[in-house]
Image 1 (cartoon, helix red, strand yellow):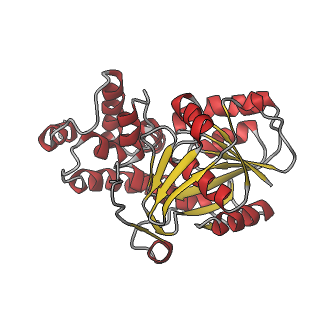
Image 2 (cartoon, helix red, strand yellow; image 1 turned 90 degrees about the vertical axis):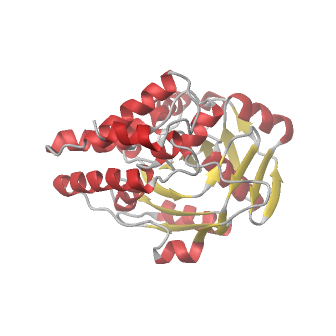
Image 3 (cartoon, rainbow, N blue to C red; image 1 turned 180 degrees about the horizontal axis):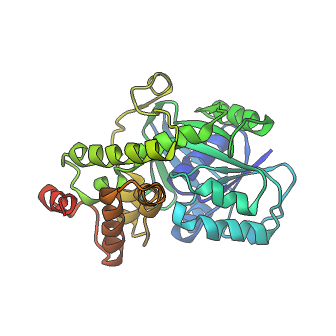
Length: 322
């Protein structure tokens, strides 16, 4: 099995470094300064276990890959970049190789199924950070992360079992699930607060806003008949395999949305998080004004080139009260 990681960022970087350390064949697809850094000096992963430096074979585009029958592709790009990545993979010669969506949100798998027949969802629980090219951090312990995976739209096959075993060997606890999308909808609830984290200062009280976003989403789920499972920090599996711990000299940088803004990525995935709730609400006749409103706030923030943490709680409350 060769594992191709499309999108060597926070998640893809940690997964790639862990797999290489465990002796797995890995090929990365990266871009920009991350690609340059990996080619020049390899990839560094910082974790509670210490500092790990690996050499990662890496290309800048899928067209540089000669796909093999034993390839497994891990899609680690943000939701707003998914369709372009799928088109590039298809044009490069990928056919029926298994595609695993290691992504937030619930829209990626359905989109991928338009392009490829062998699609799998992965619920990614990994406190990972990517701010500096060539360096990724995970604050997860005892495992680097916790993944739940299965075929889309449902079921488990031999590839799920095989990849779960490889990841677990690499200190990423991985569990095949018959109904992985239930887990992914549970993770979506958690990710609704990403934009709140990006807007407010680190010391702000986020719960007063995220709780209202989640309540709105749960009403939408109920109307849509969507089942979801809790993947929060207090679940037995999280308690056993994944806690978030401090690392000296490597403070946590916040949510993936906050990291995207801090890196100047030029886009955020809010349309596929809070925007998913807005979409479902419109489809099923349940108003979701708060989540809809924050998708617009996120888009305006990126368009103006604003940094993270620049909004006061009172200002955000005013947005919620419109």
